[in-house]
Image (cartoon, rainbow, N blue to C red; front, side):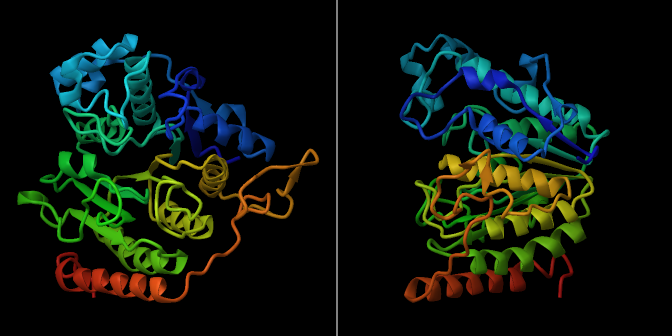
Length: 375
């Protein structure tokens, strides 16, 4: 394995749960590690577990009153004033250890920050909580570990490119850094017309000094690999080249996949892998968060494929079909291997998705590309 790549993870996440019926699983890192170990894609030296949790790191991004409220919720008892902070709603239930988990997330961000000078690619499988606001929980996210990391990097005057390919718009990052030209924020996601958080449209381009440094690429529901890659290849590479960041932060959620139960896109992990590969090639330094994804098979296979890409390992998918005589995957798209079957959408849904993609690209051609001197 490459000595340039590192996983930042703690098995302590596996002690906690949002609840038996909640779609967000905190054992997602174990799903990935078990898969990657079976394929000999990880050496023990490539896993770093931060051993300290700094409560003051939460306040780098979040308000003091919000952090205090989250701490009060740690025993799992709900209080009436929690609700104004988004804590205790169905998406963001109160559970025992809620504050302990918040500290774990921030320790992962701090750990990546401290290791980035020594490694070119760092992967945080349990993290990428891009919906949390400075004073409110939202969308399964109680704290914003990405925001904490960005604040740490900005304190060193780093120039940050944030790229988000989770199916859900990264609204917490957008809102927090909307006026900041030192953080270029780019989010590819299912259109807010059909999916939470119901925003992230292409005309949300930043304000003040941050104008043109907040870029959204909404994708029509039922779009497939072809539509996603059409937009991704046209927009991401030339803009990151012009911005020339010190560090790229990526949120690489796996919920754009056709088998995800919460979203409406029709992608496979073939286009996901291609996008992750482009992100890696365009990044001098890369810190990637696992992000969302609510199909366990997509999590284990998607994260494993991303890790292989970070390590420049070519996966022989046929040899990964059977491990120890048993099928690795249960997803009908995977046939037991790491890679999905190709999936092509056709008919009126595809026509609408293509027209919408062309409309968004036309907006970029007329309004965004001139600012970056892209022809």
